[in-house]
Length: 216
Image (tube, rainbow, N blue to C red; front, side):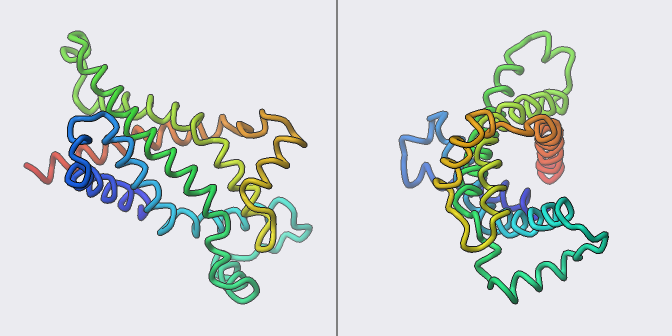
């Protein structure tokens, strides 16, 4: 919830203010790309990195623990603060920024492109509602976003799993490439593809509905 709120607020803020700083962007298709990039950076720092740091630890602990007793989220957060300090929640910030920056830049720009393409079709305009067009454009943008940002997601997971004192983003990426080959960067794409395609479709549709309702 916080991630989506910050993403759209940052995107709309950047889209309104970037043309004031760079007038050439006012009519450029790159405006959506740069605005999405700003949104991705904002959500990475404020929400995604701390949340992913905790989630990755919980998933990793559940997969490797011998005991059935698992730490709750508050217990894990308390232990991270006590043993590793507040900065442990921003471990892996660089790959998260790369992932979310790519994610949002690609998502918003491809969503606009798919939406424009669909609305040019007379058949679609005659038979599909605006919400259906938004849903379809969101799904298309979700598919492209997954393949564009998946390498950063896998690198981020490895970096955060190592904990404080582990290798950085570039060193981790190099080790993954040498030990497991280039395909490791797109490992486990299918579950994220399903999740992000649906997430992108639903998020854009709901956002569009809320915007239209607030204007009415």
